[in-house]
Image 1 (cartoon, rainbow, N blue to C red):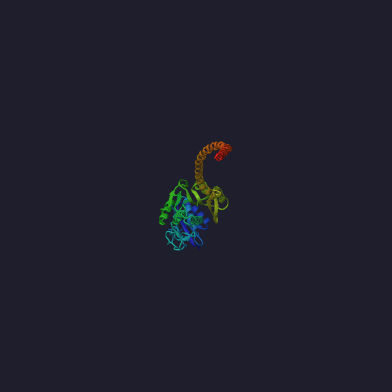
Image 2 (tube, one colour):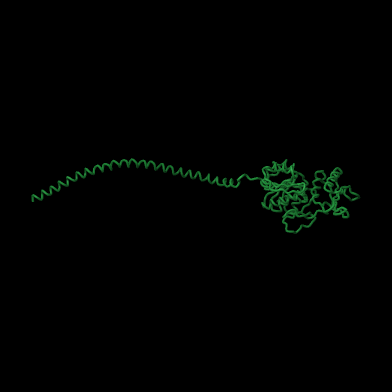
Length: 366
């Protein structure tokens, strides 16, 4: 006896493919029986696999079956309920982030970011392994850089951008599916962050950057194709999806400007947390760059000071030179004085002797 069922009504061209996809996920698909029953019913054993919420949404989008009616029920005896009401319950996804469907009551467990989400047909209800991993890595990035700006590429239901906005960041989500954009905008409004989480239909090349954190939870081939645009916009952290092995290595090689910080593996999927590498000795270079203008500013001042002193020193030189002849002129004068000394002494000596002799004669006559 099965535990729960998924039923889908859509055009016949998509039903066969959907049946194969649901069986690949462990279900038993069969045509619905009876009036009021879905056209396709897939029965599953065990607890509800909520990753189907996102997987089925992606399949319906790819099969051009966005107008499909999806129903679930908890057991074969229960009533069919629209959408995922019968199986999608609140769930914690990271330390600070959890999601609960619009029809459930918000849990009160202290998490600051419980997000009310309407899965509708958009990828990203929080159940898919890559969505869970991306939310955990995003939470870690924003815990390390509070208020960092965020770009969500392939936004789907908008859960990543909305989570960033609830945690205090400004976020932009870009999505090629206009219906997904409308769902994301409604989810942002429902969570009270329509002003901080904005969504646009288009390509990433149309989004002006840069952003501190870029998350691209989409196929690796698409990530590599849009690498130039992502590299141009991601100034810090980059979170991308890949499959383990060669695909992950290819992504890492494509984004060679970024260093691998960590990985999150979940079966067939791998989330890569990359961070833009700083230039070698960036700290020393920054300090040197900061000092350089100051040193450059000092140089003209010192040169000007020396230049200002130079004329003074030059002006002193002629004065010193002028003093030299004066000193030289004094030299003969001093020499003349020295020459006069014996002459004066000689002339004074007889004069004194004559005076004395005259005095003596005068005394004898008396």
